Length: 214
Image 1: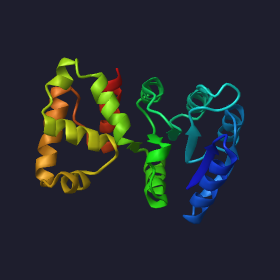
Image 2 (image 1 turned 180 degrees about the horizontal axis):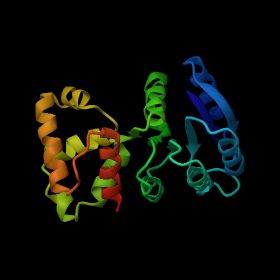
Image 3 (image 1 turned 90 degrees about the horizontal axis):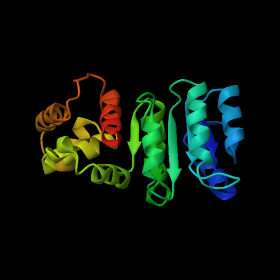
């Protein structure tokens, strides 16, 4: 797996580089600004870009803007966003394309290297890796939506775990129910959200997230 990192803090950038390399990941570029990120992914497209939302010079949204520009140049470029905050606007903009792997992790809620590397690999493979707090905010934002309001408490739990990128088996284990029950909840969720069934779990999750942010 080949990765580009865009993080302005040297210690964090260096730490991410060393940690990923220790897990056999190739770092093709480690940059500290959006312009260099765009140049790096255009010159040598990676399997995934890890991007801090706030980069120089204003530390507002340079990172996400560069990531969106990179996805425009490299179709479907998987992007894993790192942020200190749940910033719904940025999550919505990333989800809007509905294609390619997407991740949004909060820096202070990444607890170990194995968890983080697993998220990076999942996004690189076209899946999702959304922090539960991000999902909770997206769901809360849509509580007034009639379709979302129609979901049962258990269906909302399943939806949130799906958005994290968990398999049916993992969801079943987490909720202490059977995989068959998870499948039934999933079918009910998509029916209530008026989404077409799909055999591609990643595309289903992206579709749901895009719907929730729509």
